[in-house]
Image 1: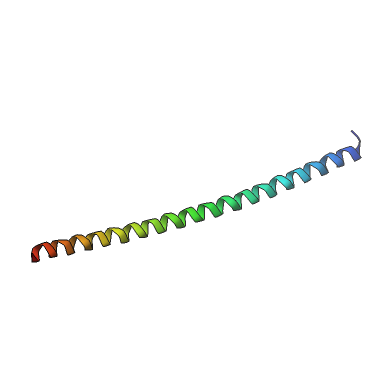
Image 2: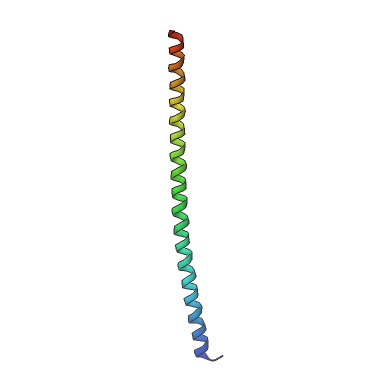
Length: 70
């Protein structure tokens, strides 16, 4: 191989490597975004579950009071 062929091969390898790195960064961004949304959803779900449980407890207490008054 002469020097110009080696340069061409190295240039092609650099271009392919840049493309792969760019794809990796793009995919990493998509995955990070998905993970953030998933964590936010789980956090919200936990908060709503706690609120629902609290409201169920309040309903049960009110029902007990209503039964005691009758």
